[in-house]
Amino acid sequence: TFLHDPDRVIGIVSGRVTKAYPAAILSQHGLVEDQSPSGPIAITW
Image (cartoon, rainbow, N blue to C red; front, side, top):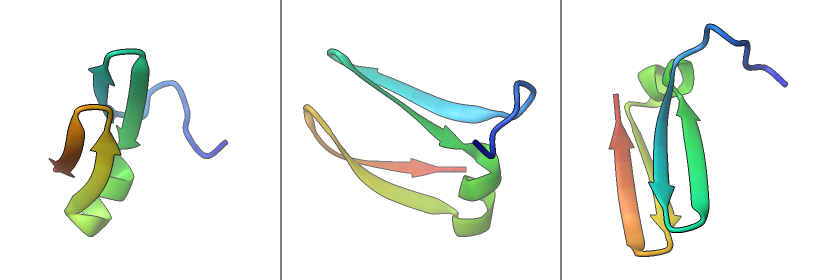
């Protein structure tokens, strides 16, 4: 994997689904659109 223990992530938990978005990737792209069990989400950094 490309992540290491000290790397920062933005995490979400929705029901039984857990996702982590690396801050280093978010800082390059600014916005990630994804789906959660309850509907669409947008993650920004």
